[in-house]
Image (cartoon, rainbow, N blue to C red; front, side):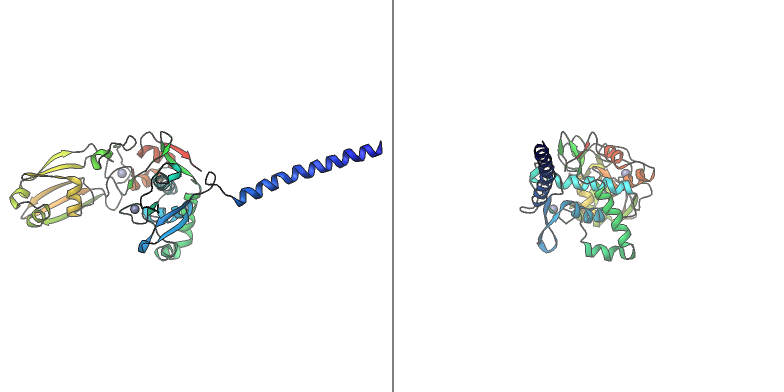
Length: 313
Ligand SMILES: [Zn+2]
Ligand SMILES: [Zn+2]
């Protein structure tokens, strides 16, 4: 009887040891082979001097958010920026159905091409004595939204953004070619205090004629042919040519294509509303919404019509 009891106790002890050891074994296996399903993907980035570097997406995002939005913006504006920037990158990643943008590298660090990125050593110079405080704020905005992207019909989407809309954002097809269902014109009244909400640019009639490759008479008689739903100039007739608002913006270096002009004493004075292309999230508008207490999800859902916020990893 005692022998049987000892045997049963021995079995129970053995069973307990097995039960205790199994999770340890499986844990050590998980640690050895991390998967991209539950952790940040590693991405290849085309950086300065055409050098490709590898970095964890979540770590890279800290430099992107720092490059794309002032650190003193409200916390939920920074979180909205982190999600929009992450979506842009994830939409390019092959594991999520994307094609990348720079061959072997998925993304570059040129703000005019992909997204701005500030290297850690440059951040320390940019922020000086506020480096630790700003870095902590942006790292938290990134980590509190880890893995979250904007999705439409179940896929991460490329989410454009810009500085200041000046009253309305734009339908995508009025600025670029394609009509994108979640990039619709919306009213925005939260960016009025932005530094480039309104601006002016003056040129002589001859300067404009030269840049437009038109005659001075044509410049004096030029007229708006079409305006977009968001209030930007779509097309201007200059003599027998037509120029798009975005073309004029780039030829003259205007802050946006939401402009009007007046001609007096050989000067063409352009009055410009806002800063940037106008499609997607207005960053100063997002900051204004955050200051009024909006959370990052409602900011994103306001500027990107009909999108969902999904946790991708
Ligand atoms: Zn690029
Ligand atoms: Zn705005």
